[in-house]
Image 1 (cartoon, rainbow, N blue to C red):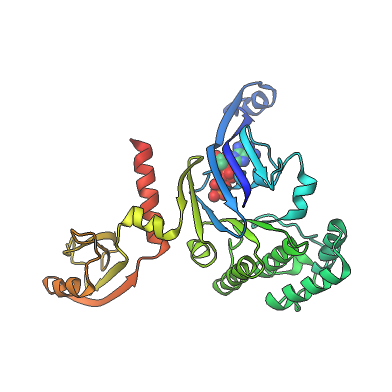
Image 2: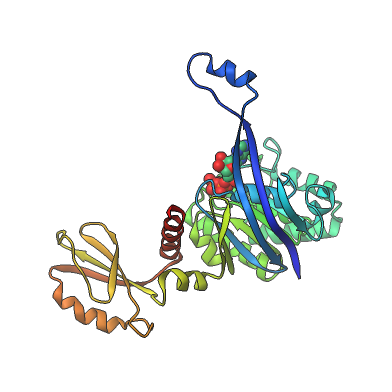
Length: 337
Ligand SMILES: Nc1ncnc2c1ncn2[C@@H]1O[C@H](COP(=O)(O)OP(=O)(O)OP(=O)(O)O)[C@@H](O)[C@H]1O
């Protein structure tokens, strides 16, 4: 069952034209000239209950704008957008009971109050029963190790503690969809890991549909089972990480990193392409053989005898970072044509 339907959505921002130079500020203030930015351009997709979707794209691709439209904060300029069959802007009140929203760069907690006071306020606004509230508070406190900061004012929390509290708050009323805009931005490795594990549980065990934007591809690997990529406002990919990998890197699934004592200059390796050259460290991706099958590592290692002065060799799986890099290169090349 589709709980979100995004059909040919366009969002255009209209801003006052800015003038520079002498009296530029005054001219900007009184001018009636406008500039238009198409942040979202003809995007269509649906989301089914229980999915966990990574909404990706370069800076300025229109990700936050899309989240703001789906949560009813912004109104689309064109197209049809339904969340639980309702227009999210017109029915913000009904929709807000079924969704939770976390903006990595903006807080929904009361800055000067202890965390638990924001939770209490949320309980009253959303009409959560005492029993449900206490159960969920206990569950999130233990899952997120929140006991040590539950009674501290929000302004005294670390970024990681605040983000945990933000996510717990967004889930207190037991929403069916959780929207997260860059939830792991600026967090340390352990906190990121903790938050990803928590979100995975929320998706799998609590059956909460997740749609998140991120620039950290580990979030995608650990939380999401579907990827949507937007570029310059348009959707350019909708599928799984494995499909994205196949589309942009073929069957290739391994990379070889050769480390040298001194930079050997340009080197070629049979059955592999150089994708990153750091001088003394060269990164290769394996090219599939003619029948499309991946070349065996042994074949590649046998060919290394033609390369001298190797200090170290490592063989790694191609990660989502390489896949995305290849995808973005391909999409930007298509744009230039
Ligand atoms: N309130 C606004 N008024 C005018 N233009 C805006 C406004 N908000 C966003 N934009 C523009 O719309 C485009 C898309 O912005 P948006 O914030 O949705 O992108 P994003 O993909 O979330 O970017 P990032 O990854 O940097 O957060 C950008 O060109 C941005 O400058």
